Image (cartoon, rainbow, N blue to C red; front, side):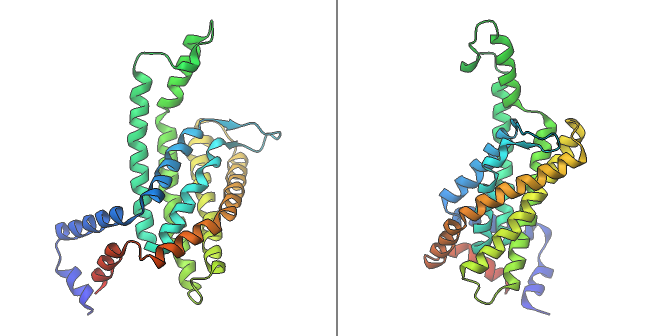
Length: 261
């Protein structure tokens, strides 16, 4: 039996939880702050922008404004997966989802506090507009539940698929071609998963979308978000190269290697 297996077998549940918590803290300290900020802000923003639908000339197609920024979260996760691994990227996405829930709580509190939004000062329509703005920021439980569920599932799909493709293409793993294959395929599948899960949970049951609209929305959103990923893939690749050259997150990587021994 390997040493790692012996160690794991001899550890209590509390010790394993403590070890995982220590690893998570090291990850949060090791992740560059700018990328972490990009991930968290994109998750918060895409859920807020999802409240606005995009007017399209065909009835069977539906999109919301969340597609403007949702690709940023997947770009961030692809970079984290490439350097730290899929587990680290999934934990980072769960942390971002948790922060989003806290922000939604603040939005909900702001919506319940008596007062007037600046944009509601239109003569004769103040109460109507103010109520609409309150409801937009407060959101609804099923939209929050659907978006959180969709993001958590799709981020795990994206991260582990990205890693799996990287294992298959381990020859010349540092090339841009391999990076592009990993990110383009995983982003396409991950984005489609995110869109279809949200559409089925929220749009189909609560907004009356047909299954065709759910599918076309998921597919169209995937194409738009994938194109954004393609445009900025060189940016992500350069970040990965820079992190490797600068040995970013060495403390976390060493801890993870020690766990395997």
